[in-house]
Length: 279
Ligand SMILES: [Zn+2]
Image (tube, rainbow, N blue to C red; front, side):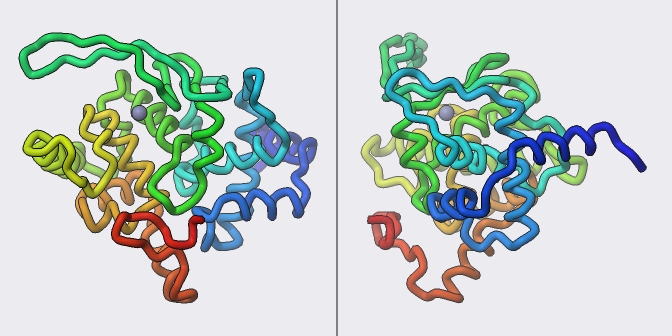
């Protein structure tokens, strides 16, 4: 059956071809894509092209955005959607603004006695309801490995969360998922992390303590780990990993383990959680 959507899509892809050499360079920049099979690789490549067609990347002075950089960002943006039905998951924004460095943004925090503190904090990313995604370029450049950090996936997870209204840690779940399962997995892990930090604010937590900030950050940080440190997340919070696996419909832990089985020294972690091959 002829479809306007498919025709448009083919036209966009034909107009902005990616050379095999450029895509190979993208793959080399992004170890967290290692182990994708050929179908996934091809799909990600097309979706990264379409992403760049639909979203406007605005580079502020000091940010050098060439084709490789744009594709590297787009490939990470599309990784979480790779096994989701093709609908407009990122419909909540049209623009990504790239800052040359961390930026200041007014912050608020209500402490246990109800006092709201406000201060300026250096941020590397922000996603506003109905607004653009803001990313600090050094954070984008530091993303892409299996090292428990991915600014692109973190901020775009906030956008998925916002599809259901305010960011509250509950993105629109699929029909085969249950809100009660999601809520109990997320809440108990969130409570455990907070209890650990309440007992000792300097505690060496299994995942970034920023996840304890609020449920929206918990979802964004655990999404970031799901794709960039699935082994750490699955070990610390298996029920959270299981829910994210149902939501994203992929299993990065299995992919990482296949890579490690094939190459025994592939990205094995030190005690600090860093990958030994990171440099
Ligand atoms: Zn966040």
